[in-house]
Structures are given as C-alpha cells and as structure tokens.
Length: 296
Image (cartoon, rainbow, N blue to C red; front, side, top):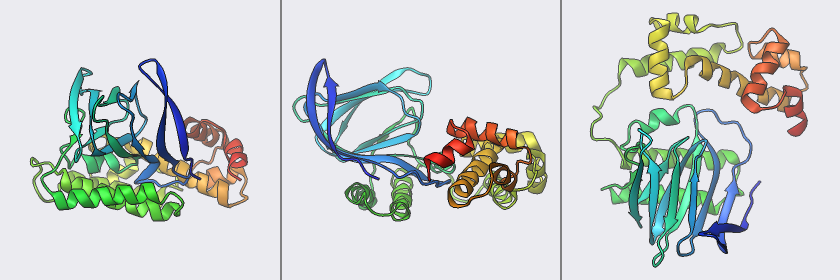
C-alpha cells in the first residue's frame, strides 16, 4: 500500500504546503534487510525537520540544492554539517537530528528508511558513522548506480515487495562499495565465520528448544565471546536474533495458516503458550490472536 500527497509541515512557526512523494513499505517480514518508508521531496526555502529521532536507519541523497544537518555524534554532542547536491547523510537509530533546507537554494532529496539484522554489519564496512554521517564518494560511477536504485524505488511504489527489496539490496551494496572504509583489511575474519555459523544454526533449529550455549558449542566458542562478537557485528545479542527470527516465522504462520496459537508457538520453539504470547507481545505490541485478526 502506498500513500502519496501533500503534507502540511510547520516551519519556523509558519504553516506551508510542501509537495512530496511519500510511500510506506508494505508490512512484509524480511529479516536481513527491510524498508519502512521512502520518498522524494523538493523542499521549500528554510523547510526543517526535527529535532527528532528514528527507530531505524534513514538515508537521504541530495539531488540538487543545499541544506544543513545537525546531528548528535557518538558522545551525544550536536555537530553541524553543510550538505550539497551529490552528497547524502545517514541518520542512525536513536540519533537526535535536525535538517534544514537552505533559504536561497533549498535542497531536493530522495530518502529511504531501512533496517535489518545484517544492516549494522554491512554499514561497518563503510565510513558512515554517527561521527561521520555525511555520504560522499570519489567513485562517480557507483554513486550514480546508488542514485538509480533509490530513484527506481521511489518511482515504482506499486511494484511487489519482493521486487522492491531486490533493488534495496542493490542500493545497500552500492552504498557499501562507494562509501567503503579505507581502514578495512580485505578478507574474512574468524568472528565473521562464527556469526555465520551461529545464524545458520538458528535458522535451521529455531523450532527446537535451543539455548545460546547450544549455539556457542556448535561454533566451538564460549557463550560470552559469541555474545560479544554478535552484538558488535549484528547489533543484536544472539538471544535477540533468535527471538526476532522466531517471531517473524510466527507471523508467517499466523497469517498463512489456521493453526491455533498454541500450535504456532510450538512450531517456533515455544512449548508454553503463555511464554510465546508474552514474547510475541514484547516484539509486536499486541497478542498473537489480535495480530492475526489485524492481518487477515
């Protein structure tokens, strides 16, 4: 489902009408990478957004014009960045930010809000951080490919979620290539191998009564080391990854089958229906039965 139209925004105490294209990504469960919303806007002079925070990553690419980004760095100190066409900026989850279009040459930008279990790991290969949120690259060719993917997504909101998520993977790949960190040494690390082993084990055994100790034992490492490298690379603990994976599988069963709530819970590794319902509500904010009724 997409939503397009005219939005009323408050700018410096004055109400203006800003034309924008804004689309909500359909409620489809993708685990590794997912979009939440995307759009395109030619801003009015001085148009501002914020101060605000996001629950997910939000990337803007500036097609024309200029503007200013004010965003907290890793220490919570607000930094100011002047951004022009051909550049972009990445807002991180929980990061306080404000961005303002120039009074004389207001920017036109496209944006995508995204997240996923593999996103933090992917972004660590780039130079984009809370301390360095401005996107710029010396590779014009790859930058143009990144922009092409963003424009394609914003111009084709009615395509299927699977079609759009395919272009989202290309967008992320071009971001990783064009904003690659010079500090990274080519070649895999053992920690990457352990994380992949852990993820594979979870994906193949989520329906069983598995523990984090079981996952660590399969990888040949101790629980605390697994927790440390998992958190650093993926942005979630192994327990959070396992729970999120189970809940996503649960929503598929709730939506696509007529299994009872108890049977759905059992199918994703919860023998106790109460424990399953409590875990589900912690993730989605509603009980499994209520979620099923809302998504029929």
